Image (cartoon, rainbow, N blue to C red; front, side, top):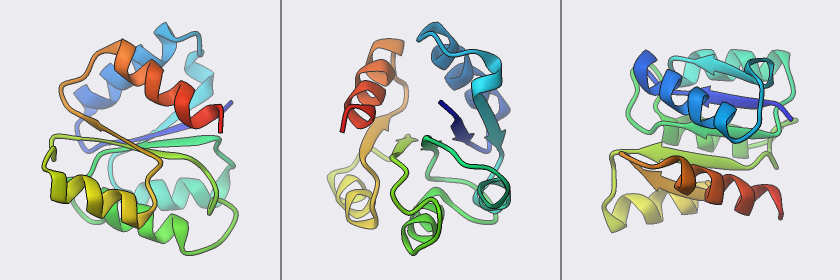
Length: 123
């Protein structure tokens, strides 16, 4: 199982990584990117089973990354969970229409991330 964590905050990437490890994954199971541009480059080099992305990032935001991933290629069907401070109904609908499989509003608990991961991985 390979996970790609995309967030412009190194602290947030570390928190998400720690939660992922609490869920039984090892450090070797995930890679990190600080924006959509870097994530897209990494996606071109490796295959991932799930993408966890923030929305608000420089260069290429999470929504643009989701749209790019969903537009075609090897990763078109990879489950994507958006983890963001954008908690408004309009933002959630926009993200779901763009192709995210699930949505988590920051701050979040390990239990919520586990529940959402289990949900997308069981599909």
